[in-house]
Image (cartoon, rainbow, N blue to C red):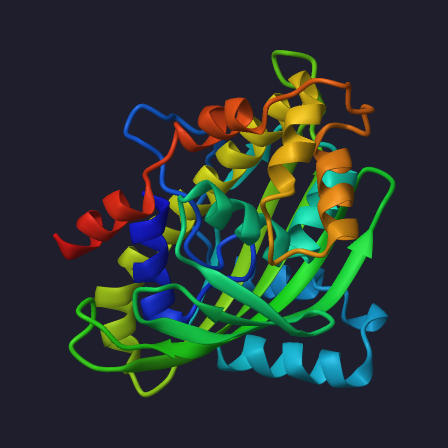
Length: 301
């Protein structure tokens, strides 16, 4: 479940960027996400993934930050690829403006995460379960059919999931590109995430034997469930764009122009009709996920 997995993941190294950053909604057990399996990464894969980062198109400061993160990483992994039913324009907005999606989750009552902008492309994060830190968008690109975002997350965790306080950082590369329509004919994007993690003050053996399995299971589940939520969101928005527009009015942490852009992009820029009950679409979206109270009970187990 994402909320629990994300707290564990964040507790290990703060987060894995937006697609895996923060406490996303947690599905009920019946939800089955769409994924594509990928093999374990080797040293050669690590080098290849590092070379895929477009360093030549980054500023000197960002390039240095990325290079240091890659060199110092305790763990490098590529998560299993995931599929999301959305067009590239909406996915680019959702990935590069994560605070808007987080505001939607909070308005639905399915997340305690706060992700507060402190500057353009920078956020202060608290997951409500012991993780705090910052997330920064270092680099962003768009192509004709997809895009890429590179994030750096830094922070720490204090709580029952670890016998000691943990601090660390994580460089996350999120790539997405069109992979053909889904079964309903909607546009679909394949999402790939490469992560370079550095957990402060822990030996390699401890990280490899103890944290790494937990981190990868949690991160993979997190990405799958976020993609599942986005797919449900875009489907509901396409059926009833007016209801989604009214639902976004409840997102009080998001500026009106951003709420309007979010609703329009999620609906594929279909014009809202005169009718549409926000509570209908709210029940459709929130009903698939655990409430905050249920999440709290899960975390206490």
